[in-house]
Length: 215
Image 1 (cartoon, rainbow, N blue to C red):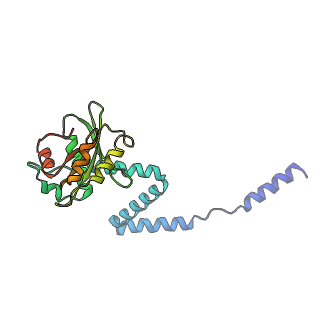
Image 2 (image 1 turned 60 degrees about the vertical axis):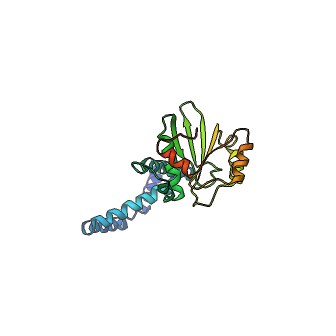
């Protein structure tokens, strides 16, 4: 078989290759353009949601979790405590998540604190807020937004004492509640080599109004 014949065969095979059908894409583009002219706002929102969905599908789960953490921290930075005197009832009206944000913000306001951020959530292992002082010391804060009379018991003291050093690598631990602590909780805490700082409702209100911070 000659080279000329081979070249002609290849050209015939290339001509037989099917060309991509662009008719559907052209029709879809015309429909979108027409819809944009008729309903610009609605179509714009729909396209934006579709693009966002495609972006989220392209993000790996680990990166997506980091994105949610970033958005969570951004929301925390926008949250502020009530202006003026802060009452205990202001904290009691918050939900659990808002209470954790408020405690993180309250910690950040103290001049000895370098940073404080909410870390609470699923599998938080007892840590709701981590505060870091300018000295480098880390403080774990456990937040208990309880109704009056639903007091923090001894089991919480034991749990926090068992995790704040070895799990979270903190130097001190604080438990803050809108209620109070049981007698057994105070007794257990007194037995610890390094007692946990216990902040009940009145102490929280005092702290929020330029009182002593629990560190």
